[in-house]
Length: 205
Image 1: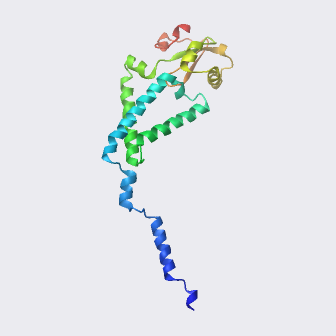
Image 2: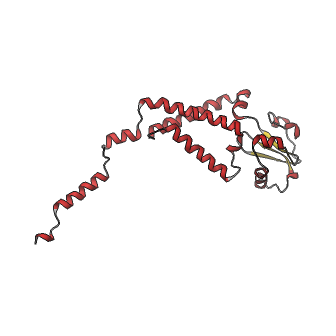
C-alpha cells in the first residue's frame, strides 16, 4: 500500500532545511571574514575612537572628581558598567567584529601604559589624576573639600563603617585618593609628613 510509505521528497526537504540552518547564507568563508575581520579603512577610526574616549574619560574624572571611580554606592557601580558599555560600543563601531574589539582593547592598553609612564612627572600626574584631598580632619567634615570632590556624608559614613569606625571622633583623617578610594587614618596614629605630600588640606591634619 503506497500511502503508508513516507514520500522521499519530505525526507530530502528536511535534510536540506537542517543543512541551511547550520550554514550561513553567504557561506562560511565570507561570513567569517565579515564577523571576525575588519576593513582596512576602519582601523584608524577604531584607534582614533579609542584614544578620544580615553581622553574624554580623563576629562570627566577631573571635572566630576575621582569619586566616580570608587565603589561608594551600588548605583556608582552601575554607572561604571554603563560607561564601559557605551565606550566599547563607540570604539568598536558598526558592525562589531572580533578584529575591531582587539584593536580597540590594544589602543586602550597602549593609552594606559603611556599615561602610566608619564605620571611619574608631578605636573602631568596632577593634570591627569588630581591630588588626594582631605575630607575629614580630626573628626570634623571638611565641607569645602567634600563639595569639590562630590562626596556626601553618607559616603563617608559608609566607608567608616567598613573600616570598623563607630564614630568620627575616632578618625584622624579621611582622604579621598585619586583612585576614588577613601583612606581612613585613626586618631592617635603618628604619620610621617612625607605621607601627606601633595594632599590637599594636609594643613588640617
